[in-house]
Length: 391
Image (cartoon, rainbow, N blue to C red; front, top):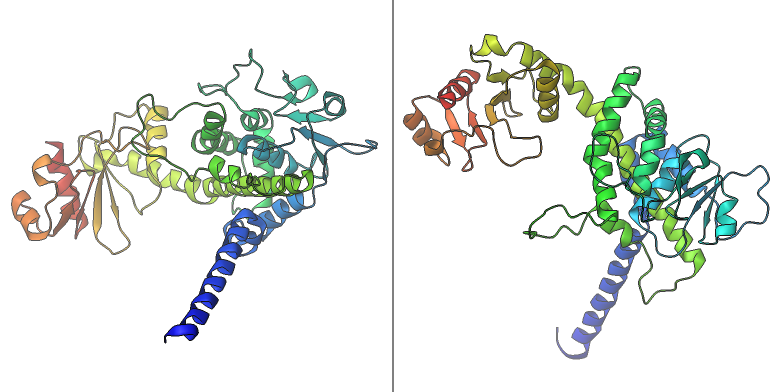
């Protein structure tokens, strides 16, 4: 194909490609376009409908005319950030604020009429429901942590337990929700989800030294991308529409993490507890545990060690999806890349027959080059490899 015909098809391809790119960018700018096909699967219909209705039925205004019989949530106008989008979204999950009007303004006279104000107003006073963190004298943290709270952290601190009860009650959990689990989830969700939002908003870096790489896909980054670009219209109507999307995005991810705790993470606790209780039957040292099935085990193990005053365990064994067995070195903390005692250095990186001959255990499959994990064809082989690694 040459000449004018080729140019015609090239132009058609170019135009179609541009349309495709604009469609994708529009979808990414509007999370609601993605919610029905993705979020409803992750959340389940009850929670998806609760979030969708609470967020997208919201009335967002810049001024107020009549406040009679209407609850008002105040926050600032203009460019929005992850913390206040999540703070307002979390409040909308509570029955008390589900039908509240959201007022986006910096006018102190208007904010004074709001029932609750977040991220604006230079005041932190739970007795009057004022939750700003920008004032110079504010140094609030969640008990047991050192990271200064953002408006999201403040709402979580004062309303988090109630929000989690609402989420868990609306999900299809097989077991009743206990207060002890709500407290466990409250602590875990702050550490693994909320704290980094507080840190980013307050300018707390993840490392004291130079960063080795950049992360540009955090929730805070993605919320920032929902703001209109500099060369797009900046009308209050568009800003409020995008703020609604930001609430949906942040709230959905919060609820997904909460549901993962209740449906995936917490049921693993009894499996890890049973393995810890049985550790001396596995090896007299008590340094090796065997899970009856694979599950999220690291955080549970660290919690159980502290609660039961167990000496540090070094290796965890479990059967993988293919029927072979894994030996994994326990990390120094649940998110660390460093192990308490990695597998023997002289075996790291070896595989199959070379590894089996070197260690004298038949059926060895591999030991990772960093020594944090290895594999054997049988449980017996994995256990023998763990015992040799104790030496």
